[in-house]
Image (cartoon, rainbow, N blue to C red; front, top):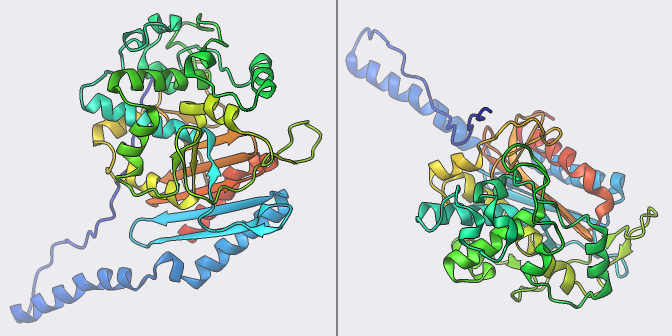
Length: 399
């Protein structure tokens, strides 16, 4: 078991402090040194904001359009937010295939499991406040949940609880399809899986949205507030995320694009915008119910890694990777965050998938930049990581 080193907050420093032996007039020497000290600052200030850099903007616009055409995605939004150079948002494709409405820069998408990162942040805030502890048993907050005797808050966050994932279960899918207008309660979702973990908690890794539904219940029990109100008061309102809300539990602004999915597994994307989504979004809840925009998620990522939401110690907890015998392929999981490899170095973030939508956000500690991609067609889900990889290369000048 080993802990990954946190790479965040690595600020670039000017090392022009080498010793010099002055010769000649001391005032001239001081003036010369002052002039030298201004050179890096002048060069840095001359670098344009991201949106004002025509070469970068042109490359990003080409990237997102080429990606949309090559993947046959219905629509996509790509947002970039940097430390000190502003941001950029670009789109390609349509939000509605029938009327060919182009995707707006502030379009809303269902972001699926990116919701898990929001939940993890709030759990860690509650730990900071002394309301709960990462090693508390779930039973301390949800006594009615049978599996709560065996698993801890930490294990739920990092998917080492052993709880079976409810989402891929055929019987769960059948129950949702049977009544798309049903408003699911969290305990009903948990009842679809066995209370017995598939392995001894803490000894292996297996992705499980079930654990995050249980976390949502524990959060509500610990605070006495609804999940939606906790997300709003702790993250949405402090960061002014005007396009973000927990679907099925509160009203949000207009602008949600239509989702398309290959529901029959025949290679054709069907329009899901004409069917009720209540059962899907309420069942997803703490595991995947948030709706947001690319710009909002970029703001969230910058705030998270910039220390606006958590203390350094708590963020270190999120970035702590436990290496187990069973690991996710090609990436590592912390507490509600995934570490992805890219050509620009390791990045942190989370992906999301919910019928009709795919999403991914990442933050590069080395570049101090957040990149978000949202799409309304699940056929393109396996290409979002390469898209963000290429976007990071453009920003760094490595393309």
